[in-house]
Amino acid sequence: MVQRFSIECAQTETTCLLTLSGEIDIVSSPQLITAARQALRYGVHAVSINLSAVTFMDSTGLAALINIQRSVERARGRFVVVCPDGPVRKLFAISGTEYLLGVEPAAA
View: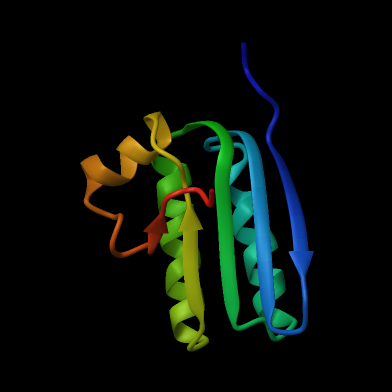
C-alpha cells in the first residue's frame, strides 16, 4: 500500500528540521526541494532532514537530497540527513552518498 508523503517543518531563525513520512518519489521530491529552499531564503543556516518515517525513496528522492545539500553548501550552511537502518538507508550505502549527505543514524 502506498503511504502518502508529508512534510513537517520545525524552524527557528537559524535551523530547520524537515521531518518526512511516506514515499519520496518523482511526484513528492519537488515538494521537498521547495520546502528546503524556502527555509534557506528565510536565512536558515542548518537544515536537517529526518527520514525515520519514510517507507520508500527512489533515485529522484536521492537527487533531491543532493540538490538540497548543494544549496545548503552554497549558503555556507550545515546539512544533515537522519535515517535509521533499513531500505532507505541502504540506498545511501549503495549509491555511496552517506558521507556526502551527512547521513546519521536515528537518534535514540
